Amino acid sequence: MKLDDEQEFFRDSLREYLEEEIQPDVEEKAGEALSKDEVIDYQVRFKEDLGIGFSPDVADDYWGDLAFYGIGSEEISRVWPSLNVTLNMSFPAMFVEFASDETQDAMLGKLESGEIIGGLAVSEPHSGTDTVNLRTTAEPDGDQYVLNGQKTWVSNAPIADVMLVAAENEETGSREMFLVDQENSPFDTSELHKIGWKASPTGEIYLDDVRVPKDNNLGNMISNAMAEGNTLEEMLPYPDSVMELFFELKPLNAIFAFMRTGMALMAVGIMQAALDDSVEYAKERESFGKPIGQHQLIQEKLYSMKAQTVASRQMAYHAIDLLSEADTDARLMSSLAKGWACEKCNEVTYDAMQIHGAMGLSEEYPLERYHRDARVMTIPDGTTEIQKLIVGSEMLDMSAYA
Ligand SMILES: Cc1cc2nc3c(=O)[nH]c(=O)nc-3n(C[C@H](O)[C@H](O)[C@H](O)COP(=O)(O)OP(=O)(O)OC[C@H]3O[C@@H](n4cnc5c(N)ncnc54)[C@H](O)[C@@H]3O)c2cc1C
Image 1: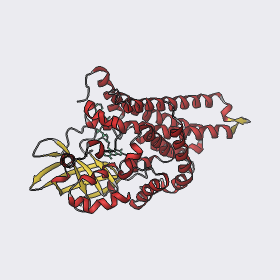
Image 2: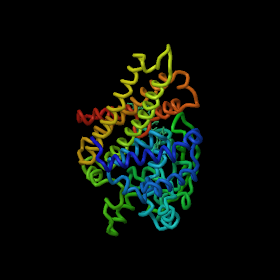
Image 3: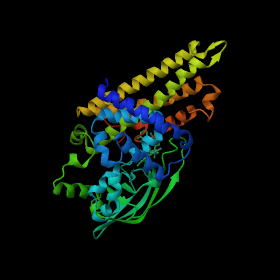
């Protein structure tokens, strides 16, 4: 895919903005989880300065064109992957608009000003990949559900105002989603520490008799909103073509295809940063009386890093093209791109450290952060193993995992 003039302009302006406005913060803030105030500040600045946003009220403008979504994922991650994750994973906050009156009263103002943080809580201590066997329950009680269970490894958990929580509805026996807001249905959280994406707050959620209104069941929210004349397209911040795939692939698979394509381009952003730094270093650093770039083994590494970066980007943009055309092959291609790019990103950042010698290991240089951030990429949003099995099942029409 070749970017058109408008897309190139967006990429160049975003890159310039990130280098001037965000890059200076990274060194200082990349080592620990951002506070809620810091995340809200970035969210509001992105909206005001660039007119693009991840906070739900402006999500339509940004996600409405998939190429812009891809460019955003790559460029932000080239500078700071943690920020990309934190802002993107706030998306469930958009459902506040369709939630119960009490959730709207507490959260709608924050949603309108972009000062709300959301999260999606599916994973549990006993089931990450296996999302079928969840233990969190939602027991109906009058006009409420009572939620019990524990969620883990949830992005934004420690700072979220609202969480979309997956639980088994004990009435229907099916897995459903519930919007839980911190003000009306307080839930406890704790922070988890990890090797990379350190600025992205990740945590556990403890649901101990947490009461949510029946109107906060996602299924009820959608049917109530549709009864009031809203269409699905108006409610959800996905391009029409992704919405078309809701019917062809099932909604969750369409959403995963969308998210995994973004993850693949996140990996490309990390690779590009590592490659750019390595090319510069290969020109400057000398050994045996000449720049290390004149040693053939360094050029071989740069060749391989470039090939992996370009191939990963092409795969991800192929997935973007398929998503834009509502082509069902988007499921296969987004998993292929996510699985491939997130693994290759580890190889590229490893080679970048090697090219930098001892400086690659130094905390004074960003190389070790690229490598730590790359290491995280192969787990969330479906491990590499699961991406391989999805590609296998799409090719063979036979599933090896369910
Ligand atoms: C930084 C970070 C952010 C995250 N953010 C979120 C979030 O916002 N919301 C959320 O709900 N979750 C989130 N997660 C959780 C993430 O989705 C899970 O960690 C992931 O799905 C893997 O689950 P698990 O860790 O329990 O590993 P397990 O499922 O226990 O898997 C262990 C190993 O077994 C392999 N495996 C499992 N099943 C199979 C199979 N059928 N065939 C072959 N191999 C298999 C896996 O690939 C893996 O290698 C996040 C995780 C991380 C690390």
